[in-house]
Image 1: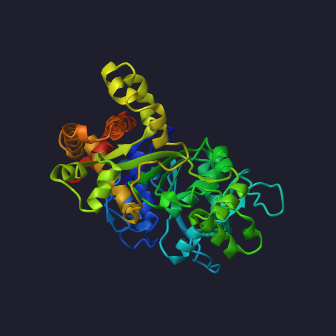
Image 2 (image 1 turned 30 degrees about the vertical axis):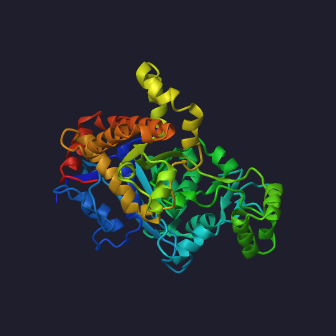
Image 3 (image 1 turned 90 degrees about the vertical axis):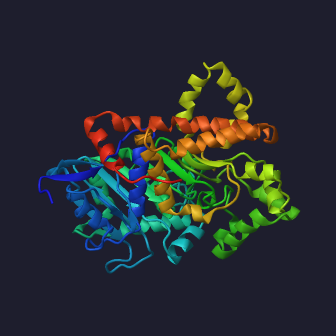
Length: 480
């Protein structure tokens, strides 16, 4: 173990998307599920106080996941000197089940909130009553950092449990005050998966004056329209893996109703009944009581999209076993794409100069169709169903890892390049059987995926960063 050097995470505090940020902050979101004991391999303190101070080898374990973050070495004095693991069930005041950790070096502060891990957390997720954030009346929260709109009650309560907690290493200091002091001295990075993403958003709102850089993974909706609009300046990239179901809840509806004022269970029953019932009476009442404070997503979406070239009727035919050999080949033609609409907005200016591509992509796919796919603050209209298996934090980290390694070594690792070429070739072969809107949508998405390389350039500017990527990429081959 070298006493003079230590590892730190490569992170970029910027408005533009960084795939290195996405990977490292995703690993930190995974780490939030771990224990705090330094003697447990893969725990929070084992990672920072053992793995990150041993430069004889790269960090190797995050929770139970075998993974190596993108790191570079610094003088030992610039290591992570403050590492705190916070548990609302620890100490004398055992309440709820909210966990997070934060780590600080001379330059950076990293805060990661744990996601849904047990029954208490599921109950938190399900407590979707919207609470007013304003200071207009006695029933409003008057949070002091969000002044309009409403917030998910379960997430708000889980977040505020931490406001009552004391720093384990300094019994005279409260957790939020300690993080605030650290944020005044360094660049602030906040992250979380699932429920952790919702809590990370609330924490980012609380610390918005200190310019947090928030990356979330599979997070549910947390705030209603006015609050989302108020916090629009916060840097936030929100990742969705395929048809992960959690980003689809709470429903994109006004979930508030008068029953919450009298008896909470009736309020939840009514909200669900409004969504599910086809009754004309229910629908009429729903329209009469609707307002604009619906739950919306905050941040810019990044979608890991499983592309296919088959229309819905063909999928239905497969389910009915009415499939020909050709149809089966169309159904089996898939590829996974890394879609960042924010990156692609800039490249559309370049596309407009290329007549042939413009005709193929933009004349065939209208702006209205493109906008529908990635409506700001809403879930992307790309899903074929609900996928609980795609919610795992390991799946998010694993996919980003594979794409990052291929970007680092494009001549050596070509798994996704090959997959996309094969997908395009098969799609062209059966073009007559594929609806135009599906065909040109996929062309558009294939081009969007090609812009991913731009998210790596910021990590290739200095020798130190290049060396960090070189260390990271020195791994075994991967498979899709």
